[in-house]
Length: 109
Length: 137
Image 1 (cartoon, one colour):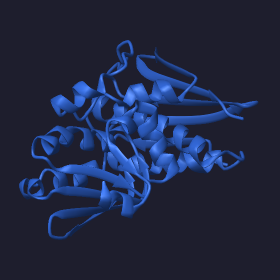
Image 2 (image 1 turned 30 degrees about the vertical axis):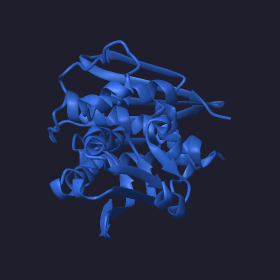
Image 3 (image 1 turned 60 degrees about the vertical axis):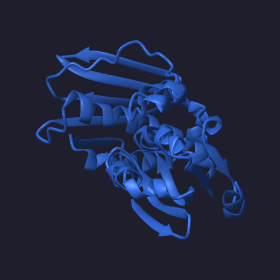
Image 4 (image 1 turned 180 degrees about the vertical axis):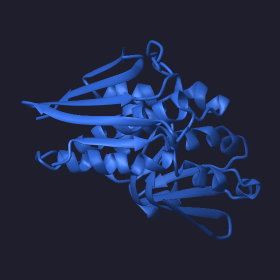
């Protein structure tokens, strides 16, 4: 699992590459827990290369969501593979998080 | 076709478990989503055994066994550690509460119960065993 952060003016894009499980979730948690992440207006999560997510990975996003909302930082997922989106759907998280098909829609969200 | 796997109780072995399940399922022509759902269910149970039942003690190990009976897939995950681990009665989590509380855990067994047709935990020779089954087209 690799997490690459690409900052721009007021948007941070995180590219996830690989399988996000109970072993690798700590990498993502470390990235999302950085205090300066709350200085961005938006955090875009590019899931094109995210091939797997378990409850541990979902839990990392859930655990930071309220903190982001309180700081008016919008968290937007895009380019999500169908099998990964299916996991969000099974728990009903697709209704509680912003997941859009493309980067253009994520930028506009 | 490898149908059994033994791993030490380290979360670094979860990748090996997922690869084992995927390889076993290649014998059937299954949709990508279906394969991922079975992989996820097994991964969640194994992670629970490793982290909660065995506290990541690498001297302990788990045995996995997969088989098909017609269209029904059966997976047995046997914890060889000494702690009996029987998850409490499943209750659907309120995810809005989880978000408010910033909770990280507590969704794994919900996923397993929604993904598989049957989920059973029982004891055998003073060890915990989990049996999962799912009818696959």
